[in-house]
Length: 326
Image 1 (tube, rainbow, N blue to C red):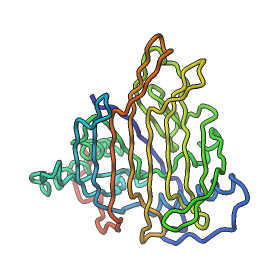
Image 2: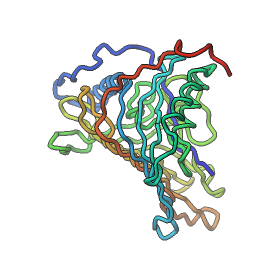
Image 3: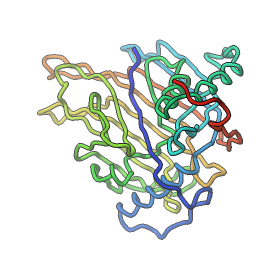
C-alpha cells in the first residue's frame, strides 16, 4: 500500500529581481533572527533560480525487516527536470523521465515521453497537469509517495511558517571548507501550514504535509517537527538540513522519530546551492500495554542522489497542441 509521506505546494506570487546573481555577502549577523531572516531571502533566490534546471537522479528505495536488514531494494534512474506549468506559470513541479529500473532500460522511453507530454499539454487545469506529472514520475515507486523535496527548500523558514517554531544558534561548523552556523529548530505551536495525517491545507501558500500510521493506543499523541540547519556564514545559503517528525505520547516525556529527512546541497553554476543527496527514513512505531511500552524500527528508506545541475534549453508551450481537453 502506497504511503504518502511528503507533499508541498507553492504559489510563486512575485518575481525575484536577483535571479541568477551570486548572493552578496551580508554583514555578520548578531542573533538567530537575523540568520534565519537572511536565509529565508536566499531561499527565494533558490526558488527562482531552480526553475528549468535538470540533472540525473538516482532514487533508491529500501524496505527493512524487524532486524533492521534490507529485505527489498529498487533503484530508479531518471532524468530529473524542474517543470513549469503551462496552465499556470506560478506552479512548478518535479518531473522524472525514468530511463532505468534496477539497471534495466525502460523500453520505448522516447515515444512514451512524447506521448506523455502531449497528454499533459491537453490537461484542462493546472491541477490535472500536476497530477499527471506526479503519477508519471512516481510510477515505479514502491511504498513511499514523495514529492516536492527538491523544489521547496527549508519551508520551516518561510515567514508565515516560522512563528510556529523556536530557533537557537547551537554552534558553528565547516562544510567543504565553508564556515556555517548550526541552527536548531523545534515546533512550539500548531500551524495550518504544517499538516499531519488527516488535516487539510486551508491556504494556497507554501505548506508541508506528512501522512503516517500510529498505533491506536497513541493515536492522539503530540506530533511536531524539529531539526537543524547548516547555514553559510557569508551567503546565508543552506548547506544541510536535518528534519524530523516527532511523536510524543500524552503524559510522557519520551519522544520517538517517525520520519527523518536529511538534505545535503552542492555548489552550482547558478548562484545557488542545489540538491546533492536527500535521504528520507520512515520508522514504524509499535505500542504495547495500552501505550505504556513503545518501540520503533526503521521500516523503509528512500535516497535521492543528483549529479551537478545544468540549465534546460527546452521550452514547452501550450500553443504547441490543440485546445485543452479533459
